[in-house]
Image (cartoon, rainbow, N blue to C red; front, top):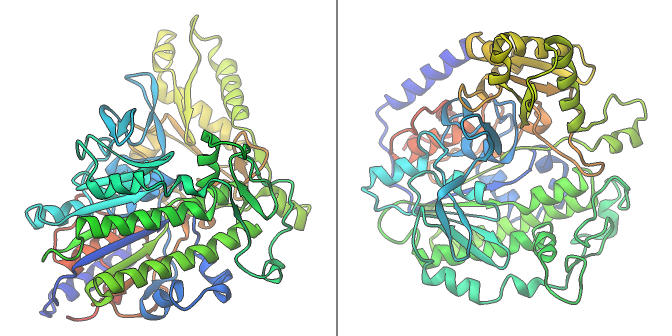
Length: 548
């Protein structure tokens, strides 16, 4: 409480100091690197060149203690926070998916039954499930929709949730093309069609991913042939990695799956982002524009090989070069003094349990099959409530660490859903793998009394959340895979991410004050003189703003 009051007082004083803002930036560029914990900047810094991360770290403001304050650290939840400044309890994006009781089905965070793809055939996506606004939305409103907001990524949810509800357009990669949705536009602009017809994506078929550094640079990483890595899609678990999807003779769907699990996916996205900037004349129209870039390939590689793999070191070195290329391009096209650059990530990652055991055999870590939790909850419900009505199950769904009970079946036998939820919670709390469990009622009514409870509250939405939410102990991994790494936990290894600001009006330095990616949107609003996003939870990072 004291910290929040102090931060609020600093914000008020800074905004009433009477200093004039300088000229608005011509372009704001927000970069999100999917699955990129803060420690990568420190662990791999010796391998960075001078033009990428080092340029931002040396000349920008780096917040070394930036962590998400929500429990479910997954892609959609993180990207929804970055430019809204709000968590899922307000903007509704509690995870990549949740269960809709009314429609009795799982809902994808950016699904939209009313939209179609533009640039391909199929169902479209949109931000209709997102509640509130983003920095980009407020920028568009403040300039009478003269500002353009363009958001690009390999993943639809990353592009859409960064862009906001009022974006000019969001684009994402689908097989051999970048596509959009009828939510934004009816046809692709010429520059996007030109990119798709250039063959740039398919030209990567048959390439080989080799190491970017000398072999000796990888000596402090895990073994290259670790059996707990996932070498699917024809990639294999050791360098070099062929990019053909397991069929070197022709392009199949598995080729595209392999491509986005390699550094070439980020290279493709960088080239598309460059074409978007030129094609849309971003930063050159007498008004502030916003370009959002979500680099997704790091996440796919991190899941497959884990944070201590040769592949993740290589991807980090290569994304450093991509950032350097992007900064140089922006300097040539617009001039970096005319830009504000922000770099962050949507989440970190947990170590692979088998890796920890290989280094410390008695480590308290293991994989927990997802189905075992459902079986456990079904068993607890059966012992306490008896057999469910014919054709029903007591557990209606389990999605994203949320357990949804069958309310209709419970009421049929005279059991209140809240009482049933508490039975499940009490049983989960006795399980060795479980660190915390809360009922819907607890999260709705009880004030948080610990950092962990606060994170659960931020991931709780009264309509979309389940009857029970839970978290495993640190370093335990839930899922049905026997290889690879995961994330989604309310712990620092999944929550602590980079947060860097660079540009005019930014006071360079390293800041160890408590901060969060939720602080980015209100800070950009303050820098650009536009309204704060609706429902924002984050603060203005006044310590890194120059008096202008």
